[in-house]
Amino acid sequence: MLKLLKKIYGSFVDNIYSEVVKSPVRILPITFLFLCILGGILLFLPISGRMSFIDALFTAVSGVCVTGLSVSDIATELTTFGQFILMLLIQVGGLGIMAISSVIFLLLGKKMSVTYEKNARSMFDAESKGEIKESLYLIFKYTFLLEFIGFVIMFIRFSFLQHDCIFGFKQAIFLAVSAFCNAGYALISDNLIPYNGDPYIILTVAFLIIFGGIAPVMAITLPKFLKGEKLSPVITIVFITTIILLVLGTLLFLISETNGILTGMSFSDKLLNSFFNSVSARTAGFGSVDLSNISCGSYLTLVFLMIVGGSPGGTAGGIKTTTFAVLVITCINIFSGKKNIVRNREISYETVYKAIGLVFVYLLVLLISIIMLITTQSVAHTKLAFEAVSAMGTVGLSMGATPYLDIFGKLVIIATMYIGRVMPAMIIYYLNSKITEFDVNYPKAKISLT
Image (cartoon, rainbow, N blue to C red):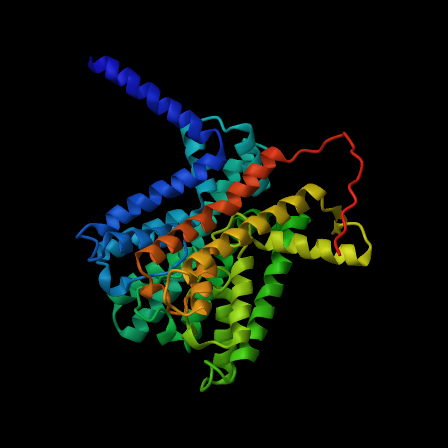
C-alpha cells in the first residue's frame, strides 16, 4: 500500500513539475505566488512580529515583488527575525525568477524547454547554455559585490552618526539589499527622510538602485566593454534611456518643488533630493521627502517615471526602458519618414508589436486597478491613483494613502503588485511563442484614423 501511494504521489508530482517548468509563462506566476504565500505565513508568525495576516501577506507580496508599499511600520512591528525574513524575500524577488529558476535547472541538470531557453539566451545575451551559466555567475557575483560595497559604506556612516555599530550593521545590510533590489523598504520609521541632507547615505542608496535596475546588463556588458568590444543596440538603448530619464526627472522635480516641499533646503540639498527622487521613482520607492503635498508637476513626473520603470532583467518594474525607447524611436522615425533604424540596425515590426501589446495591457490593468480603488475607498482619488501606479510599477512611493485602505483596498494593491511584477515578463514570453513571420501576404485593409 505504501509503495502504491508513493508511486501515485511521485507520478502526480512529476506531472505537475513537467506541466509547470516547461513554460516560463507558468514558472513566473507560480513561483512568485508560492513565495508570497510562504512569506505571508512566516511574517504572520508571533516570532516575526505582531501583524494581522492580511498585513503580513501585504508586506510579503510587497517584499517579493520588490515594491516597498507598506500598511505598517516594519521598523517597529517586525522583530529582528521578521525583518530578516523580509530581507530574504526582497533578495529572492530582486534577483529575478528568470535567473533563479535557470540556476535551479542548471544545478539539477534539467533540460530547458525551447521557449524558455530562447528567452534565457535573449535576456543573458548568450548563444548557448554554457554562456547562460557564465552570465548567471557574473550576475550573482555582481549583485553580491555591489551589495557588499553599499553595506560597507553605509555601515561606516550609520555607525558614525549613531555611535552604535550594531545599529549601523542592521540598518546597512538591510538597506543595501533593499536598495539594490529596488524594494524601497528601510528599517527607519520615516524611511530616509531623517537622512535627506546626508549625501553619503542618499547617493549610496541612489547608485545601488541604479545598478540594481540594470544589473544583468551591467554584469554581462562590463567584461565585454573592458575588452573593447562594441556594445549592442540593446545595451546602448538601456544606458542612453536611463541617463535621459534620470536627468529629465531631476530637472522637472527640482523646478516643480524648489518652492514646494524642498523649501528651506540649500540648493545642493534640493539638487540631491531631486536626483534621489528621480532615481527612486524608477521603481525603488525610497522616500527622502514627504510626497503627500507635492505639486501637480512633480505628481505627473513621478507617475511617468514609475510607469516607464527600469531595464529588462534587472530588479526594476514598469514597462521597461527598452519598451519605452522602442516606441519613442518608432514615432520619431515615422514622423521623419525614415526606416525604423537604431545604430545601423533595423527594429523589426515584431519588436514594435510586442512593445505596443505590452504597454496596452499594462495600462489597461492599471486603469482597472485605479477604478476599483476610487470606487471603493474613501481616500483622495489622486492619492489612490498614485498608489496604484506605484504598486503596478513595483515602486513603493506613497502619498500616504496605503495605510488607510480597507481590506478590499489592500487586496486590490496586493493583486496589482503581483500582476505588475510578473505580467510584463509573462506577456513577452507569451508573445515570443505566438508572434511569427508569415510569408503569406493579404490585401491591405483601408482604415481611417481621423
